[in-house]
Length: 366
Image (cartoon, helix red, strand yellow):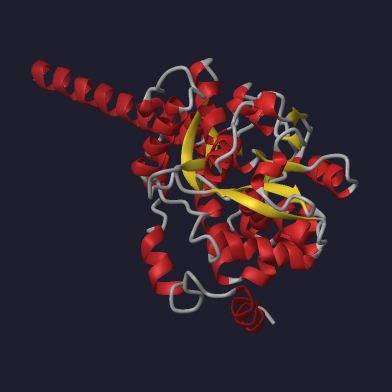
């Protein structure tokens, strides 16, 4: 009898402990969920067409549909903010992220964003031959030898890469450089769109070279990525997954509703709608499917090899720290190649001419 009482008492204690533990776990989960509900995600991007998905996700209502509270900031200080751990998610350059990681910045690649390339060398109309650029004033930074865009364009054109051959100047933004070209203060500059398209639209200059695939190789590298603060990823895993899903939906929107996406782009980047349409065409058809969420190791590693080759980074990064696939895989987003094949290829095939593409795109989004 005494033995039964002891066993009964032990069972009661075990059950009670289990219930308490379960209750604590449930309470902790609910607290975490409540914390997510009240949390506003800080997302940053800057004035480059590669990062269009940020403003599209906001203005197309994607964040709202997913129940996300997101503060979207568009300025040139995003890389620094991400490196300092002051922003949760950001569209930033892959090379900059690698350098930040080497210095201990709490950031990682959470999803892809744009293949290496779609950067341009824009020159004034008086430049007819690449050799005419020697000795000219160019917005290519005071250390052009450290710019992958300049190195790729210069090598393509067969002109010297060393800055001593030019009057090199630095600008705070691509827009500032474009305005200087328009005013006749410089003869050329490197940039991403919409400023290449803007020069062509306003007939103030033309694109003389494009940094796209790796010079001498038929391979894409990596330009910019969807980066995430590792603390945010760890403390808000559900929000992290939703942010990746929203990023993907915004890209799909650009492919399937290019005119609507272009109008959002025009408003946020403060350029004419025609320029925005030209830009979206380049991203989705003209230069291939360059905006992508696909986590392709070949892109990432090819870019690392290129950065090492040009001595733009001192050492190879720890790849496992650089690329974080856990949350991406848990987000269960659609396969990029399958999406393109089933939803885009038959409507807007690669190689489709701009005017034909525009007519079809206008019909879809009328």
